[in-house]
Length: 311
Length: 311
Image (cartoon, rainbow over the protein chains, first blue to last red):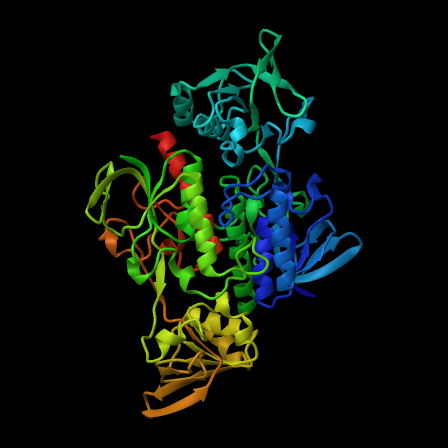
């Protein structure tokens, strides 16, 4: 029987591990083996250099930051298992976690399985990922490669509008490629976008191909009304078509919102089941930053300790 | 007119600065000049080595971590002024910030002025601070100097009980020095403390002196019922007598809770005035960790950007 099992391997998971290990709770972390198609370490392992994680004035690569955190979790006494959790049973205590061939009992569970940015799966995307294609304007927009370039944002929701507005701070021009002839975004956001002289909206437009050898140079677009293809020169392509939280393994045992994110009591990491805590992007569709994820990992650890003290 | 003024100099303030600077909002930070009796950098500058900030597997001193963050804020384009903000005017927009002889207008304000742990101001406290005396069991309890020692916790509230329970994981014995003959803590916490064989409660007890040359060796205690003094050998003294949030300069212009903390909408950094955001310990009496403060600093920056986009 474990006191606490942590599922995940990103900043939230490792921060939860550091705190629970220092509190002598002997955490066991299941970091997964290409869980959700992602290497251990999570989304940061497939990003550009990170300039906004506080404490690293010269920036740091996502892989380096994650190996530092992993080492720190180990140093503090975390047991890390490179196995993917397939299933959990939360209907009675102790909880059960199924990973590979193992079935482990746990007094508490911290879920930090993250979310995965949706991709378009267009031609050229795989080899140009993070070479001009990004799923996070807030993370990457300020990088030198995107300065004074024409940047394309794909999507028509609030996030797409926010990202387009954010990118106008660096870009010479921002093109929003919107599949339909309307935006899904709130009226306030639509007004803001339409008033911004740097943003041009391409309606009824699908991005169909990313072109470039070692970095993105052009995108091919298709107008689904006129049915015409064209190619435009661009310096960056930003996807804002949503994220998929990694919550399938829960099989509906925790309360999720309409997009599949775990619902936590605002300002805490408490889920709908006492003793099960969620932190990081799996419960956050709004901020989604490494540092906010790490902050909630700490909260989950302190709440877990407090829960075990009370029980 | 500034787009955003940040008041404070701890992890929340610097993370807010890094994010707003990268969003080209040209933040101006007032880090203060011994504001609240604290050097710029905040509470971390008077702590032991930090083992639980993710990304630093070998630990890092509070001062080093804060100078890294400060450098990063500067690198990203923050203007830092070493002046204390005495007053703000939030009743009309643009807001006004008064610092030294300056009066500055701002579209938005991020408040990250932190909180200060209350001290007892007993003899020996000043020179033994962080040499056996600490105001944060969660931060410091796991340090080698406290392992297998007799540790004293001062206080009788929920936090004191939590800290005492936390310390039982390392200590040979924990003494709770409680001024009255009852605990203020919740019944559940009281039961937990009283059931723990490692915790002994000294009722009607004031700690009156800390003894030791280069580190804490003994404390002098006074029983306020029998009026007897005694001296006990201890390895650590933990204050859990509350914190004072640094909100005096607001002069009641923002909604505060009964302890003087800024009230934010749970899960956000929004204060009672649109365009004024609060992050870090000045709005958090529960988690109070460097990493949670940094997380909320990021949230404040993203909410500020979003607010400016909407306005």
